[in-house]
Amino acid sequence: LVHSIFKIRKTIPMQQFLSFLIDSTGVTWIMNGGEVPKITEQLLVRFDEGVREASKCLIYCGVERVTPMLGPLFPSLLENDPSTATTSTNVLQKRLAFSMLALFMLDLRSRTTETSILQLLPDGIVEQ
Image (cartoon, rainbow, N blue to C red; front, side, top):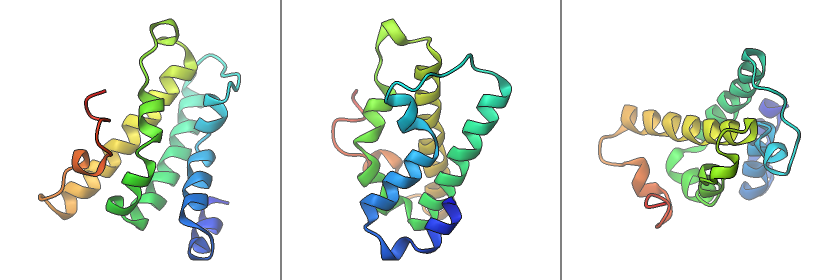
């Protein structure tokens, strides 16, 4: 489904396309209170597959273009609430944020040494 939507991405608004990609990872469901079972290897593999597919689509669209649009998502994923620090939900949210940022950074590094992922994120995110 992700690849089908990716093929028609130019016919839908970019923000709607980005929302679909992020939703396809399962993180929106998790953030909206979805019940996350105990983290198992199978759960991580399934989650990582969604993150990988979404990240590939985002990288193909251009990291420089999509990172600023996704900027508001990262603080909510990386929020540090001590009461939920070790919950499955919190672990998966952080895993998604760090995985995407790492893949974006690797893509930037493979193409240029002049742009940093930190330059693409909205002001204030890095300090949080």
